[in-house]
Length: 334
Image 1 (cartoon, helix red, strand yellow):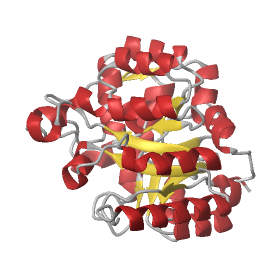
Image 2: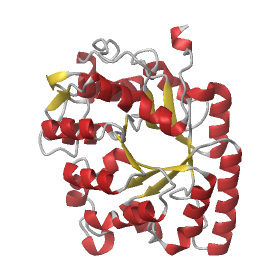
Image 3: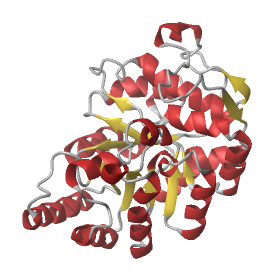
Image 4: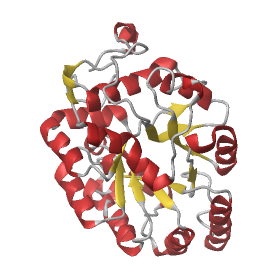
């Protein structure tokens, strides 16, 4: 396994190497519990790693509060269908509530709808993203001009160890038609698919998806998963990012919630930013401060040394184009 948490003090998490990229950075995939707890995230993101903008995944009330407090530094992704708290068994009530919710979301100036169609969601609700009962939902998203941030699939290691009941969960490839059908039916919706479409293990598959679907973009969230797999295929991974420079977004998947025993600690935030910085901007082998229980052996991470143009689009320009970010003076730089 990678270095244990007890050894975090051996890493320069709060004094990382100078960034090779000097421009603005958007974390295009993170989570915040409420308006207050995101402050601990900013303390590390801004002051240590120069990340002044983010796409926080939140409920609508929190989204409105965050926009009021932080303005154009945030573009929230608002839960459209929550994994647990929905009246999915009552079709008529569900449709009425969801149509009103999407209208309210758009009226409040939000741009992104968050969805979560993983094997676990299928376990709980026996519902996939392309189910005809959800046609009204995606039709309304498209009419309102909203984007979607969605998680489909899970790591290969999970299918090998935790999701082995193929009759119950289905094999990993069975979870992609639901995405492809929505991409094809709704060309007016930009779909930001999390964790490199939950398939960083298979870059050929990602290449095919991007080549076939112009409304698809990918984000780099799920740090230990992505860093493990991109390091394993480092030359091909670098080539992939250069080839698809307009279609990839930087994201961490960090959860801003200080009362969570592990994920709420400043060291946890810093460990993820540290790995991302060294991976995208650095060169050569580096040790990881992240424990990786899914790895079969201690991961060996590599810096991909991405070109300046790729870093600029990956960190900033793609998110700015898609979601309307504009550069503003950050409190950390005043």
